[in-house]
Image: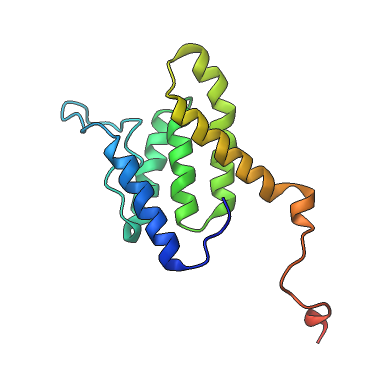
Length: 143
């Protein structure tokens, strides 16, 4: 996904994504004291991203073979500005997807999200992308 040009644009996009994701989450089961695969994006606010990441880390540990928590943690890392961690989770979610699909029914939207994030990361990590021109002026570090 290309970077947004303003912090307002990023915040608006993040709010929209979190609103959409939280609207699709079922209510927490009061009988279950452990994390649920749907807990990563439950009640997330931009000013509490570190707490959301901690909660999501617990979900990933509780469900290591499920690609959904990795995909959702990738979104949280992206919102926090950590693209490398986001891409690591995107790649992990993509690797988990096929084995998971052979045993479970998977929402096609989740499959598309995982593939979209994986493709976005590929564009950021290819040799062509790493050799792209930067904003630095030639010889600026030598002065």
